[in-house]
Amino acid sequence: EIVMTQSPATLSVSPGERATLSCRASQSVTSSLAWYQQKPGQAPRLLIYGASTRATDIPARFSGSGSGTEFTLTISSLQSEDFAIYYCQQYISWPRTFGQGTKLEI
Amino acid sequence: QVQLVQSGAEVKKPGASVKVSCKTSGYTFTGYYMHWVRQAPGQGPEWMGWINPNSGVTKYAQKFQGRVTMTRDTSINTAYMELSSLNYDDSAVFYCAKDSLYFDPWGQGTPVTVSS
Image (cartoon, rainbow over all chains, first blue to last red; front, side, top):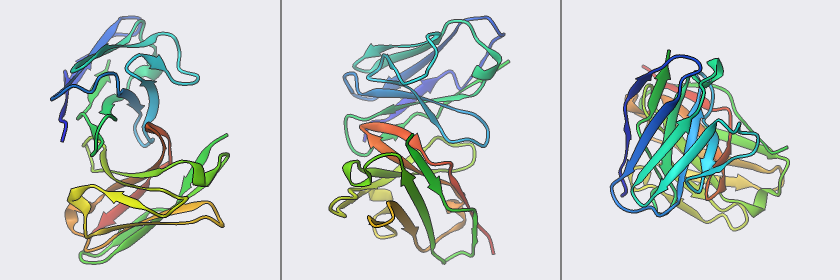
């Protein structure tokens, strides 16, 4: 199975700052990579698919990049509602696998 | 809009089974696979398997083979996930999620607590 590794585990930033989250796959997933946001007590919400395409109603401050094995989620100017846990997921092969998450905190 | 509404929280004893439902609306239920995902406390999501609501064909993650059964009732646009032989490590939130290659949207989650 493809192992997804996210870094850092926790990222401390301030509102208005830029945040850069990383995700690495143990083998190439081409662009079959999604990012999800999860707030406490809520289900994950799709942010990005195809490594760089924003899902419906996702603000433009969220952007994704990368292909193959290295991916990045960038939040250009953090808002208070962005503090959450972010997960990457590959969907090129079975089983679908997720990273362990990056917690974005103030 | 697409909605997935899951059944409520469950408390089960070790060795028991739990069955979680996922009622859908806002799209053609038989047109999209449905996935089930487990998330243990403080952990990332873990894919359990999918069901094709049109045919009933399933695919399970190896880890859950023999313990999980996914079914559906097309007359009420609802998918089900039953997990048997529960142990303490199965205490988690279980989600259904509509397939679009990726998972979108997700149900609100069903917490399952395994406790003696």
